[in-house]
Length: 553
Image 1 (cartoon, rainbow, N blue to C red):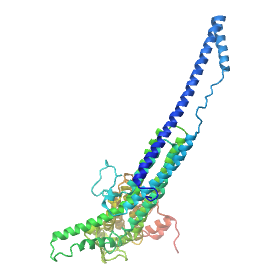
Image 2 (image 1 turned 45 degrees about the horizontal axis):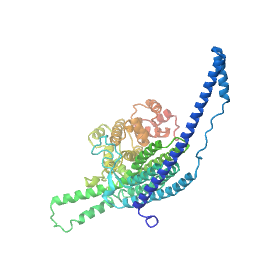
Image 3 (image 1 turned 180 degrees about the vertical axis):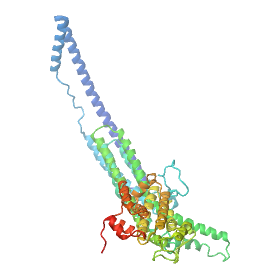
């Protein structure tokens, strides 16, 4: 770009001069046209005044000749007839609608728009190159969080960062487009608005998507910064080794204070790596907010243009940014889905360790940022709700399956939740809960239940639902109904708990009917039959008769 056009600062200064030229030319052309319109208005006014003067003289002459009220009426009728015979006013064409000056301005505006687009793309490219360096100056606290909303020290997004990519690109787009708007030339303004829409919706979107994918790759449990099944991820271990190398030359009997400093430095490096990886995902949300503000600012600028078809066309060009916002939002949701897919193997292992599946690994997993380890040993008891009185009493004083599960999930998602925007954090939590709930449902279907076991399951499920509500930031998901609609697998777990806790089979149909009226029942007939058959005190024959399902034999 520099070899073909010049330095960005020089091109930017030249564009200011070109925009000023177009602005003065457009203002002069509007002034001349306004003067021509005023001339025609004055001619029309003089013509009307002369017509009124002639009519007034005719009425006076008729009144002198005939006199009386009747003559006045006749004179008025005659004058109206004469007024109808007067020729209509036709404005003269002082300045043609399209002049040679308009052609020259349009030609200059076309060249100006091409240069403005090139300058915008070059400015965005510079922002991309600058943000590719791991410089702390390229990261800042998330600016889209409302300052009026109180944020707790561990709330969603409390430590969220954003990169400089979106701010620099949106600033370049705003400066370029508003400069074109300032020319007052509608064609140039429409071209700039279209270039802005194309640059943000195509170039910036693709770059942000790629950066988000790279950030997700650095978070992969076991291979990235997040802890995996066997302990720290590979990237986290690399940070530990780099920190340890600084202490190679010290004496073997180093004091405890220096070891604590090294551990704190290691934790800080891992936390910063996670925060910067999450910043790439947050950039998509920042782009949504900034593009919405940019749209409002562009719409406000159109108030300075004269009303007409061309101004409406400019507004339609600006509304193209709404599609860009939708693209940013859909891609942001897709990146969260990709992150959940990467976390899914670890989530399955966490559920297996919590409920005592055969595939549970006995290795310990290092907790977030070097904290205490959560160990899934081979002595972990398998999920069992076939409880007698003594077994039920033990569950009341011991840690339940779901409590262990929630502790392990916290270890996985907590470092992400505090570094993602609240909307992304909520989407991540719902996805993680959905993956865990699907795995839990499969484990529940392999267990047997007594009445006391069903009560214990209900307690565990309530604990799991409260865990979900305590980690979700959006007030729209504060109610159970909204939470169940947003996370169907979790809703199925709750429905299974309700179904297993019926006192008598006769209550099953009433429960299903009441739940369906509320729109909160997703279990099919076969699922209901299989689940009720898990109750040791319910006969399969009676279950089949109640649900009108024939026996297998």
